[in-house]
Length: 211
Image 1 (cartoon, rainbow, N blue to C red):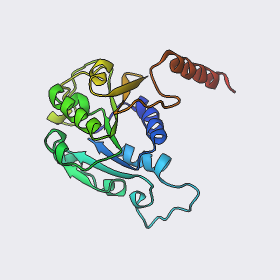
Image 2 (cartoon, helix red, strand yellow):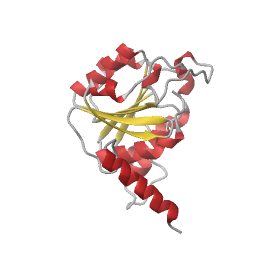
Image 3 (cartoon, one colour):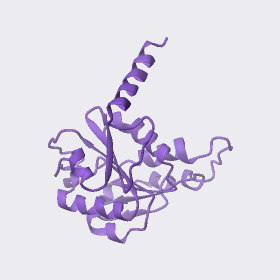
Image 4 (cartoon, one colour):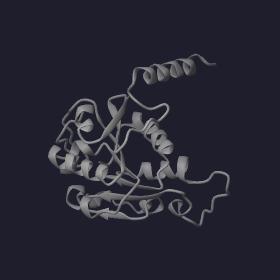
């Protein structure tokens, strides 16, 4: 997926910064925005003067690799953010990939057939990884970037993810961000429980009313 819902960016960056992974795999990294943003808001130590002669990936506390199946999306700027990009389809190479603390699938899973995607998620959960997965709330057809890989092939709900691991989620406009993990994880400010939703609404209202 080359792009994704802008409404979910802050939720994904916030959630990952709270989970504090040392290593992350960005599956279907698109334009590479999460590689950049995660270095900026979590990986790079802002108490130290940055070195413009050194890539962001080499100044960051987090190692980020990526998977990309479309050669049209292998732009030169990506080497600034990603240590390594595995070229190929995730459903064909996932079993050969190394272990990562966190797997990011930002608007990717709906482009996979459900049985293949279930096997991928279960594989990473069984190996001890936490997954952050964003996907549309409702199924819709999609064609863009003149690519067959951009077609939507499946639709995902919390019921699907709860069959694969411990699951929590948050609505983000037209999409949802899911956290799927081997063990339950409570992240302050993220989640679907009524109390967490009420707290987010109160904070949003306070922000709106503050001059």
